[in-house]
Structures are given as structure tokens and as C-alpha cells.
Length: 265
Image 1 (cartoon, rainbow, N blue to C red):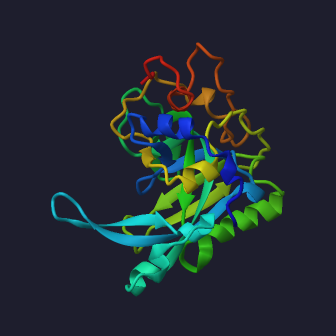
Image 2 (cartoon, rainbow, N blue to C red):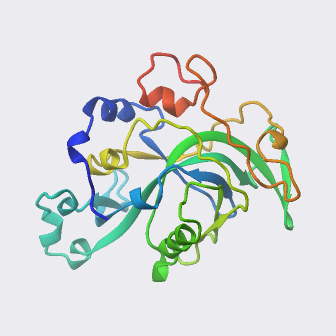
């Protein structure tokens, strides 16, 4: 899907995001066995897919890692990597981007004060987050991840009309899989004013940082009943609007909107 609206890039917002204590725009990441309960803020027609080149890079410790660099042809610019002598560098890979609102993560990681929930044979902690983040992934082997997006959007007509479970299984690059499963009830999309567009993040190659921050302590113990809806299944989350200015607003929104207040941790 081509990138659109590049003339709308806002340098001031990009600069604010770059000064985030977490190192950039938050990107939803899961460890094996975790489940995120999330709401798509980007619908099917606005998800963006672009190509990246994979470049080897030597760290200060002498380790070789791989960095992904945007193929500049995606933004109608010459791309030196497309004509690189190395076939591995010339080859590009696809990544798609969407904004999501993460209500909570069900995790086996111990979190002080968190409520527990039994999910099948496992007992997991409910890590309440209530913050937006970027969901960025490849198409998956045999395009299985993208096929899940297509299947759900064709079935429901929109990705934004319900809450989804996003689950990671497997622990290595070879056996990791992601499953996208819709919860049954219709739930209105949270009213979240995103200060950065996907086009801005991609075209400016803004830094992404893992979200949630694993070292961050649980805030206030929250009853699962305040997160999950009631009913026979008792699995549907009750959407919560972003708080009014001056109250308990999202740390992310404070940072990206350039507030001078000390971020709430």
C-alpha cells in the first residue's frame, strides 16, 4: 500500500517523540506466551505496508546485528540499497503498520498487585496499560499474519468494531507465531487523538521503542472487573475514554503532545 500525505510531516512532533525517555514511539511487543487485548485504531483501508532493506551493523562491542532501513523508493526517493552489490541487502522485506490501543496484557510475568485470571491451563497476571502503541509486523510465513487481517476485515467490514486478542507463541525466530482472535461483542473504538500519523513515523524513520516497558512497575492494583466486561463469557473489555487534560492521562500522550509536566509513571 503506497504511503500518502508526506507533505503533512510535522517536524516539531517528530522532535518531541525523539526525546521520549523510552527512546521513541512505543511499539507493541510480546514475550512468548503473552496475550494483548487491544483495539485497532487504524482500520483496514489505512494500514500501511512498506518495504525495508536489512543491513548488517557492528555494535560498539563488536557484535553484528541487523538493522532495517526503509527502502526510499517507498517515498519516491532514490534508494542506494536497491543497487547494492550484495544481494542480501538489495532484497527487501515487507512490514505493515497500524495504531492500536492496548487495554492490557495477560502475562505469566510476576507483577506486584496485579489481579490474576485463569486462561485454560494457565494462570496469568493482568497488566493494565490503557495506552496506544504501534503494531508493526511482517506478513508471516506464507503470509499467514496478513491473511488473518484480511479474513477478519472481510468478515466484519472493519477492524475497529471489536476488541482483539493478539497472542504470541513460540520462543525462537523459527517457531514464533502470532494469532489474532476477535472477541465476540461489538465495542466502540476508543476516542484517542493520535498526535503522529503512520506516514510521519515511517517516512522519517522515527525510532520505535518496545512497549510495554518491562521494568515499569504496575501502577495501582486494578480489579479485572474494571477492565473486562460482564456477561456470560466475561471476556469483553469495557472501553475507557482517554482522561481529560489535567487528570490521569496517558504518559505517551503527554510526551507526544509536548506537555511540560513530569511524565506519570
